[in-house]
Length: 69
Image 1 (cartoon, rainbow, N blue to C red):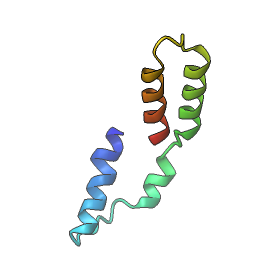
Image 2: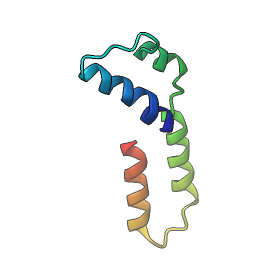
Image 3: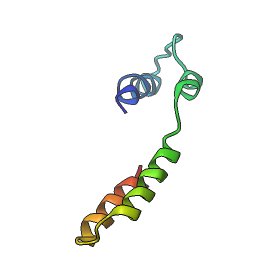
């Protein structure tokens, strides 16, 4: 997320202001971006499998946050 905050959002913000950065493009982002959806699914599955089950509100909150990512 730090890369997105520093580089991608700054690039998009510049585009919205009418500034074009010739040294960066969304293609650059997509070429370097590793999809985390598989890793998030694995994390969700691990949490569901090994969660001790004492506080389901906490489990639901964590799962909701992971799914929203």
